[in-house]
Image 1 (cartoon, rainbow, N blue to C red):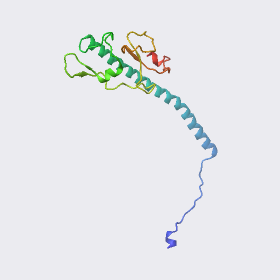
Image 2 (image 1 turned 120 degrees about the vertical axis):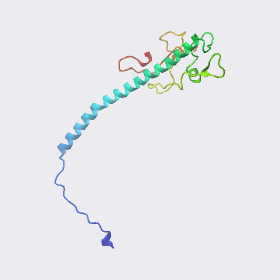
Image 3 (image 1 turned 135 degrees about the vertical axis):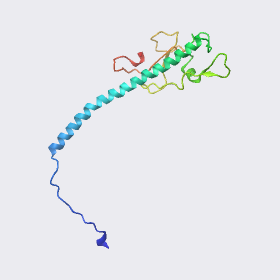
Image 4 (image 1 turned 45 degrees about the vertical axis):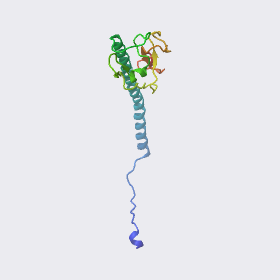
Length: 162
């Protein structure tokens, strides 16, 4: 029974193998390739985030413009002194009641888009009454949005200036 469970192992000697020099050359080639691909991958990731940031800014600004247009046309009412702009970004998500329609809300966004540079939905805002380059929100309304990121884009501009 012991003989039946015993395994026969044939040990063969290896006659072909890689030399140390060949292994060092292969490792050096792989290292050079990896070192050259890493910066390209970082730039590609940054470019994708910049594209997403531009798209999200376009979505937010489009919703603000649509809100303002509907106020100007008299389809929704606005508070006095708001200049026809939304009071905050959440109003674009929750919606506002349309004039002359009962229990009908016009929603401009499903959700507030994420800022890919700060990885949050906390956008910098400017009201109509603020200066064009103001970094603090007056709170009267939302005229414009910008990223709160202090980073610099691939084209050399700051994200918060977009």
